[in-house]
Length: 252
Figure 1: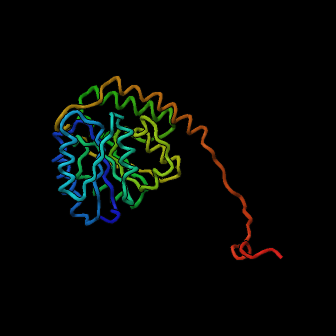
Figure 2: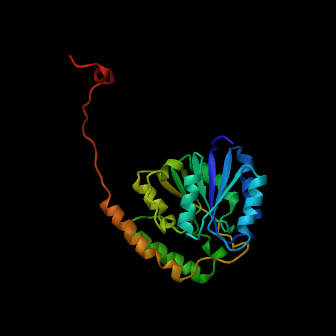
Figure 3: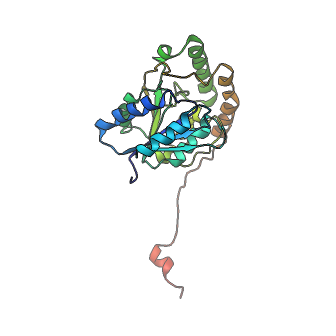
């Protein structure tokens, strides 16, 4: 396949029960758009049947590319590895549990006409797919994050995003970075916008996140705040250099 327009990047950990329906819905969402695309899945050393299933499906679906870590590395690493492997001009990141509805992909594609990066926000629909504890911890986490990072992203935990691939070209990967990509991309000078998305209940399997591992983002947040404060800022006022023809001519 020649370089596709879109790369749909998905981290996977023990999602055997979700994968067939996920790919079916992605194909259904992309078909009316008549755009070339690929699906890039990084298996984070799953312990269920996810990897054998991905291998079988990749052999029969030319749009599906799969890779597997040698050991469990976490969601940030799986997302980053997928972005690095992506060949598309645009990248869409989403979860494998079907809480992100692939039917909304066309809305992201349309929003990319106005922004370099489009982030999904579940603020209006979070209670439909999550329990009360997750709703509360998400709201508190977002408020703390926005206060410390001086950003206004309404739902940084939503990894349903679309962006030009060059938006990630100069990012420095670190554990937890998937929560801060809108801020990091803004720091690179790109236009970042949001669209409201639905929050479906998990289709199969169980959540990999609990109350305590939602709190570990604080140290990552402080690191992002430090990067924002220490980021080099400068503007070239003037520049003088020889014209190409002059530079090529030998001195007299």
